Image (cartoon, rainbow, N blue to C red; front, side, top):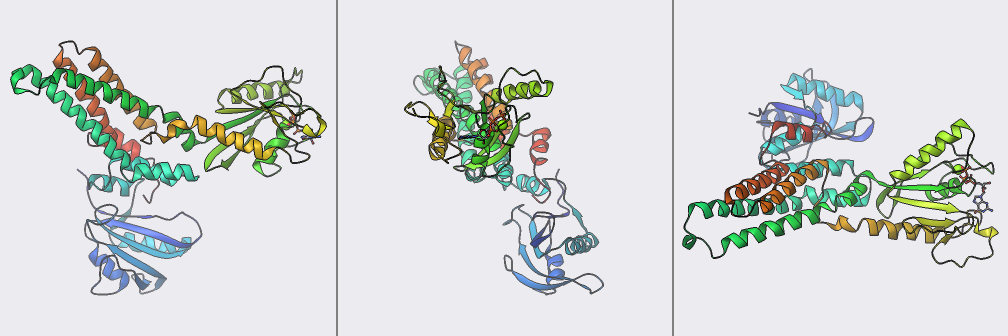
Length: 431
Ligand SMILES: Nc1nc2c(ncn2[C@@H]2O[C@H](COP(=O)(O)OP(=O)(O)OP(=O)(O)O)[C@@H](O)[C@H]2O)c(=O)[nH]1
Ligand SMILES: [Mg+2]
């Protein structure tokens, strides 16, 4: 049973800011609101300017206060928003005032938890909200918003309803005379289960791309020493982040920087040049280069002259093109940091490669680790159901039903406390 005592939190970012927003949620906040705006009557969803005073009559701050009457609010309860000046001293005063008026500070994710229990959002929406609050780039924002606005929930609901229906028909085959059931129902439910399995699997193939969008796309610069990796890194990052020198073996450790390419978050890494090193530290650096290359989504391999073998999975860059006469190979990109040459082509190639690799991200749903695991369970159950189909309608029905339950867990219609707790604890305090 969820209680609805009065909770509050700072909804804007902590620290000094122009405006801070303190949000209060509770079962009945009308009297508290009247006290804050010092009026006997008020309207919901109306901004009130107020000289907000503490219990001793001392001015706390000049604020704007808004009341959102239940159930038309984020949590589904009464909500008060106080917009004050964003100074910690003011915010602390407001907090003291609220504590004296029977309110307590909210726990992490408690506002969203209340929204969930008041049917304002399902768990897939909460996942979207978490992703939106974390979004750094435009693509991350777009994906998060899609799942926050409930598009994913509709797809999940449809899958779940189909599974409930399939399972019900399978059970009915055992209990009812075939004349009472739709014609060829046994074949129909099998093909429906198979189609559903295919559809879910296709949606899951977008997971890698979605994860890359959410966590960033790892691009790593590798190559022999002194070919100009750090110079290219600095060029792409737009600052002199990595040390550049004519001494071979300058870069010893992995240097990483996050950049935005075409709305995608990219973790770009510069690495130690590869050569037969005797120096212990350089050797460690080269090992790290290998480790970084292993987890790369895309490798930019830098040379100074055409290599014998061009790896199609990498972007091959021939740097120091200012020193070259022959620049005719179409499978490589010629760059010169010295003359600022070739970087538009390099950037375009990176974009094209990323779009290719992200192909699956246009998949219909935004998947995170939690939903991925539950979708995997669904796939397992549907697969097992189909394998057991041969006349075993009861086993078939049971596995399809379990598959539907896993989808129910994604939505939170079937919830275990651990699922809800794990989801809400990922939110920040004011959400
Ligand atoms: N002529 C010319 N020199 C360049 C170019 N790019 C880099 N250099 C020079 O090449 C030398 C090595 O550059 P770095 O960027 O440090 O090379 P690196 O691959 O990071 O080297 P390590 O960290 O030692 O592996 C420096 O003296 C650069 O100024 C270029 O396009 N043309
Ligand atoms: Mg370097």
